[in-house]
Image (cartoon, rainbow, N blue to C red; front, top):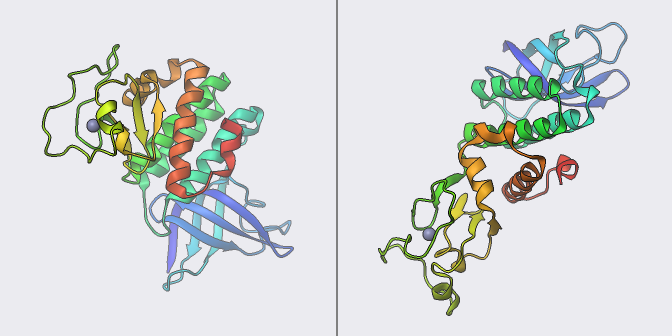
Length: 274
Ligand SMILES: [Zn+2]
């Protein structure tokens, strides 16, 4: 089957002296692995060798049976992301975005909106005037990626009891927890009762994909205490570009923790944002 689409390269690995195996994110056809035969020859059908972030219109021959590499036959590259290398943080963020996009998408599962957001993310990091803006756009893209793949974390209520945890200047206090006992978690020893209402911190559980209130956190082993200012940013990501670098680093540390749990391994590019 011949397929025409717009695509961006997420990964490129040399294959023999003359070819490459690439992973493409196609707008209408999703993530695809493809063989770019002869792409490393001086004269080829792809406007030169293919690199990560090579972007443009492609023609592919996609095999009907799953699991096989498509064959890339044309790639008209646009010089869109060649300035990414000008700022090291921007390049690292872009590579981090590509790594996560590849990791979270299944082959042949189209996400046109995510494709558009990924390109927008690359453009904004490429044009970022400061490292802190790069961090902000990276965090925003990571949130969009989770949203578009249907696993957006819950940032406004306790994922165990449903207590609303709205953005507020004051931390949750005693008495805010609902008195409904029907969905209360089992109390582990005495710590569950001791935890109820006494902690001002809020917790994030990756396995619960969201927040835990101070009353519920005691019964959860996998969790991480987070500052309220982080919760407020995650509730209102439009504030990210105006957020100071220290807070951005704390926010990214939480996301790396969560992404590592979801992928069962730490993303390679995380080391540049730790
Ligand atoms: Zn709760």
